[in-house]
Amino acid sequence: MMSAMDIDKVLSVHNYTKKDSFDTIYHVDKPPEKAVNIYEESKMMFQDNSVPTFSMTTSECDEVLLGTGGTTVPRSEYEKLDFERMKYTIAVRTLLNMKFTREELATHSQTGKASPPFIGVKARKPQLDPVRVGDIRLHVAQKYNIDTSFVNKAITVALADARKTKKRKIKKDDSD
Amino acid sequence: MMSAMDIDKVLSVHNYTKKDSFDTIYHVDKPPEKAVNIYEESKMMFQDNSVPTFSMTTSECDEVLLGTGGTTVPRSEYEKLDFERMKYTIAVRTLLNMKFTREELATHSQTGKASPPFIGVKARKPQLDPVRVGDIRLHVAQKYNIDTSFVNKAITVALADARKTKKRKIKKDDSD
DNA sequence: GTTCCAATTGGAT
DNA sequence: GATCCAATTGGAA
Image (cartoon, each protein chain N blue to C red):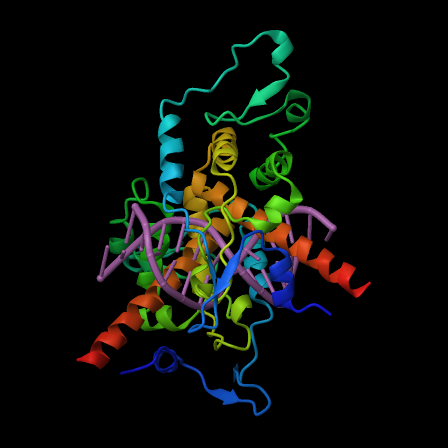
């Protein structure tokens, strides 16, 4: 029978150190100081509202470029997406699933920052690759003409759900 | 020197009981089971997109009706609001400040439900009058043509900020 | 099984 | 000082 903390450890992809003077766990590595700046920089790249286009030969055009970071998804899969009918939250989840493994989604957070109510209590999760996330964020925001803050919220929820799904699976496998 | 828990007690407007077997605090009263249903019912009232109008004499028209719940604000104050320039989050805060005292905003939550991460740890706050909140919610959602879920988020943040402001004031007064 | 939601928090803006 | 934000959680839809 695994405890909740045991499951968190399984879902940890980093090394941790336990300080003697505090009964809390800290990351060895540094938090991503430029997490927010990355958003702003990506936004600035897009400020002329230019849509990034591909200037490659036909044979190389089977990938659709999502943003300025160079993130692509297979054209065949992309064209299957019905953005008109899909809610932007589902678009976010679909694109995240295309560019990241379930494992990555379950073990990373959008910013790499600790949860404010659990600073020094819960281990901070590493940041999901900001380039791919940034491209997805801006692609969805542009597609739906909504503020990136809404997309960010959808990403956060999607990652939280991915983690919970993984947790349930671990718990189930453990009890078997 | 007041502790964080002392401040929470000052901000509590309900009676609490402490169970012997748990080191946690519970409300004596019941949680609002129909919190979500109230939203849905309000939404249904509006589903014909009818804008509630006043059919009173001029002398009684110095109040603007916000929604079907009968919540009104002084017309003189309402007409000062520049919704075109104001973000919906600010509109939410402004209307909340018109219809509730700082004390109410600092001591109540939107749903009356406990925070999931703090169930049995932090005392549940009573629900802010759902009629007035519902009228504000729908008025803003309609004005900005946005989903009520965004307005709900803005309300939640506004209440959290009101509480923090109050907390800082209590701490300051205590240290004086 | 998947998706959505709100309360809490510290910090950033 | 006021406003905005994201990580965490349990439960609802």
